[in-house]
Length: 449
Ligand code: NDP
Image (cartoon, rainbow, N blue to C red; front, side, top):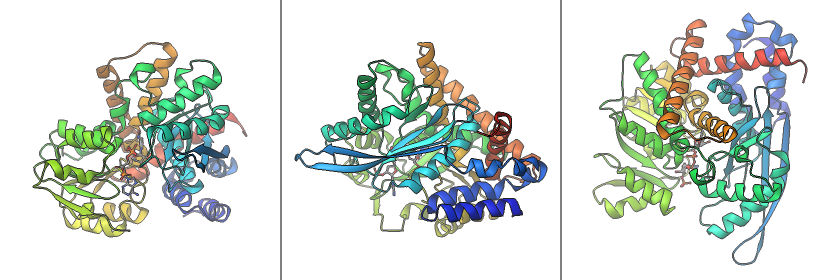
C-alpha cells in the first residue's frame, strides 16, 4: 500500500479505535483505490482521503418511550450525515439491538460510494437505533418511532437529508415516522422519507427494488462471463425485504431458490422455496422461518448457532447473502467454493469479510459487490423523491425499467474501471474505484468544505 494510503488508514484506526466495522469498511475501500491515486497525485495534496473518511456530522440522541406495561424505556438514536458532496444526505435507518456508532458509520461510509454509483444526485448517510422491533406490539413500535422522529425531524428535510428503511425498518415504521414528521412540521413534504406506502406518496417497485436490482446486476455480471441464471440453484441468507425480492427475481430469471434463512435458522427446500409462504410468514405474520415446516413437512430446517451459518454449507451455484454484515467468513467461503459455487451477489451491506472476498477471487468465483449490486434500493428511493417533487407517479413497469437501466449502467461502470486498471473480474475494486473517482472529482471542484 502506498505511503499516503497507509498513513490515512493508520490515522483512521487510531481515531476510531472502538469501531471495527467502520475500520473494516474504510480498509476495504482504501485497499482498492491505490491505482487511481497513482494516476491522480493531486488527491494527496487536496487531502481527499482524509476528508472522505470523516463524516460531515454525527448526531446521537436519547429516545425515551413508554412500553405496553407503562414502563419508560430508553434507546439510543443515531444519524451520521457522512457526505453531501453530490446531493442531500441519503441512506436508511436500521432498528436492531446490534446497532452502535461503528455499525452506523460503516453503513454511512458505504452509502456515499453506493449513491455515487447510481449516477443520481444523492449524498450519503445512515441512521438508526438499538431498538428491537421484534416482539413489540404495533402500538409500542409507533410510540418508539414518534419519539425517534421528535428529535430526528430537526436534522432532516427533502433537500437536506432523506432517510429510508433498512433492517427492522419497513413500511410500518416508515409510516409512523412520516406521520410524526408531518405533524411536527405541519406540512406534507413527501420527499423527506422514502419507502413510503403507495397510498401516501411511495413509489411502485421501491419494495422490490433492492432484490430485483441485485439480480439485474448478477445477470449482467454473468452475461459478461458467458453465463446466465437459467436452471441455476440459489441459496439466500435472510428472508427480509432484500432476500424476498431477490428470490422473486431469481425465479423470474429461471433459477431455483433452494434455501432461505432468518436469524434463528435455515429452511432447505430442494423443490424450490415456496415464496408466497415466506411472504405470508415474514411480511404478514412477522413470524419465524421455522413456521414454513407447518405447511411443508418434507423440508429440512437447521438452527443457527453462534458464529455458525449452516446455509453456506448447502451445495448451490449462486450464493446471495441478503441478511447482515460479515455473514460469509473465510471459513464459509471455503465451504462454498468446495461445493462449486461460481457467483456471489452481495444483497446485504458488507456481508462478506475481506478475506472471504479475496478467497473467492483467488478461486475464480465472481463477486457482485454490495455497493454496486444492492444500489437498486437507493436508486429507486431517488426515483421516489423525484416523483414526490413533480407530484406525478410512474407505473410499476416504468420504475422497473429505470431500475434495470441504472443497474446495467452500474455494472458497466464497475467493469470499465476494472478493465482500465487491469483488475480482471475484480468488480469489488472496480466499484470502489468508479465511485471514488466521481467523489474525488466533486470534492476537488467544491473547494475546502
Ligand atoms: P429486513 O429487516 O427486512 O431483513 C433482514 C433479514 O436478515 C431478516 O430475515 C433477518 O432475520 C436477517 N438477519 C438480520 N440480522 C441477522 C443476523 N445477525 N443473523 C442472521 N440473520 C439476520 O432487512 P433488509 O432486507 O432491508 O436488509 C438486509 C440487508 O440488506 C442489510 O444489510 C441492509 O443494510 C441491506 N440493504 C437493504 C436495502 C433495502 O432497500 N432494504 C438497500 C440496500 C442494502 P430476523 O427476522 O430473524 O431478524
